[in-house]
Image (cartoon, rainbow, N blue to C red; front, side, top):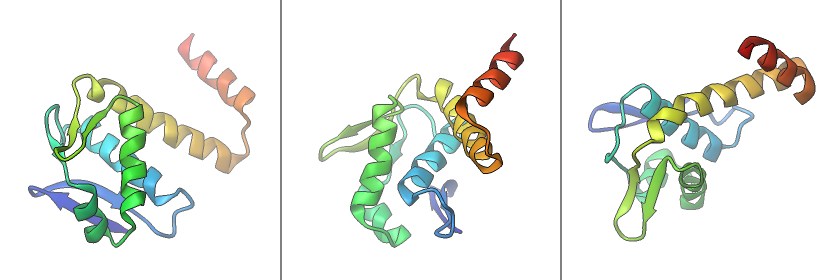
Length: 125
């Protein structure tokens, strides 16, 4: 397990032995930090090169994790100015994090998408 912090706040956690790719774990850690209020709208994420060096991973691994967050509308990536948490990112960040955890657990238990959807539908009713 590797942990990195920014301004004394826990931000990133990943485990090389985890089956999930490191870029997914980086994105999940940022989502979790937003959901828990450790990161707020307007906060800057560390530059990809700096984070890659700190984590001991390739810069493209970090950029791929950041790209996921950008595609989800959670962060904005500005060339030469860094990555910033966007307004509205917090509202869905927690749900996305929980959904990923739920899907991972369903896969571990051998539950297919139809059965999982039925369980969710039952809980939403």
